[in-house]
Amino acid sequence: SQTIHQWPATLVQPVGSPLSLECTVEGTSNPNLYWYRQAAGRGLQLLFYSIGIDQISSEVPQNLSASRPQDRQFILSSKKLLLSDSGFYLCAWSFGGAEAFFGQGTRLTVV
Amino acid sequence: ILNVEQSPQSLHVQEGDSTNFTCSFPSSNFYALHWYRWETAKSPEALFVMTLNGDEKKKGRISATLNTKEGYSYLYIKGSQPEDSATYLCAPILTGGGNKLTFGTGTQLKVEL
Image (cartoon, rainbow over the protein chains, first blue to last red):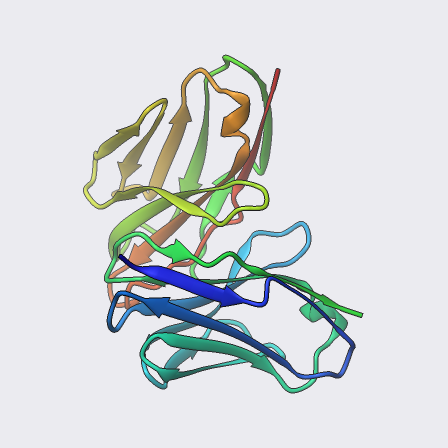
């Protein structure tokens, strides 16, 4: 069966520090991969979307970047965090137009 | 950016009430419509994936309908229970978009005893 792993679960980082959040999927090949963020009091915003290795679409201009170095690995990064980067980050995968499956999320607090 | 609207933004109902909310999306280039339930401290979970105009799907006390020609879907909950309290999210998929899931802002439901 397919599983998705996302880590860490919580993270407190100072302003200006780098960020790396990792997400891996097991049990499937060539999935669509997503990074979402829920900022305080807001909905689930799509940040990045990938249909294959090194094929990444950025949905909103921001201080973040994403990479997909392997088929089932999706990494969210920042060189210098801002206070506004605080939020709840979710990784997800889907196959075709079928339902998406989400990781457990990372609560990021930038201080 | 895909415009997905959900209403109402939040809803408080009493246990046993029936309720419904709306998801509006562009009607052109429609491929599929997803509904998810997102409970506090958990990850979103899929409720329905709908593709056909006029489709109606049901899971227990929850059902959904789809109108692709006018670009909306309704989610109904019959006899709401406290465990139904969650944020309900919809996400349309358009053709040519590579199956990308863009969510609406959600409807936050609270069911009180």
